[in-house]
Image (cartoon, rainbow, N blue to C red; front, side):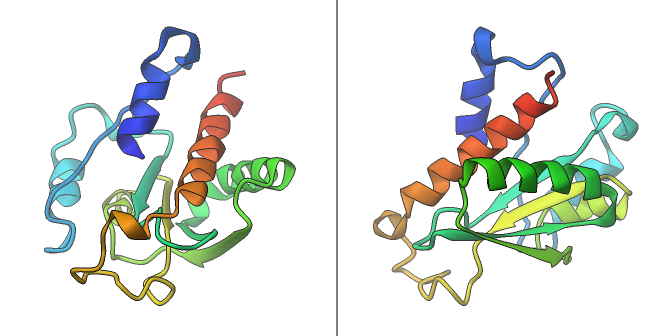
Length: 158
């Protein structure tokens, strides 16, 4: 998703009027080491970050998705939910409080608005097994999440 969104917004006619930064961090499952390092050694001022969107397991065999967010993104959450309600991209859209289990949490600890889009492990039984492979990718949910995020970025480009 990170590469697909970067490629899409790199095109001149789709480029927003504000900067988008695409990052991938290492060592998430070893304790968020990559994202923790970044927030303590940022490449640009942290107060310039509007929000962080994180993806984890977003294309498993499921037509719903869970989003974790913090209270700092309540306005942004309303925008995402409004877009999804109008366009009906994601059928099951579940909301949870933010938890310390993926890279968005490092930004949350610093007060940066953060989202995590994830499919729940209990839905996808092959998570972290040898059967966790491309056969189990549900491309419709992936495509619809891409479209939702595309529209969200464009919403702020007005």
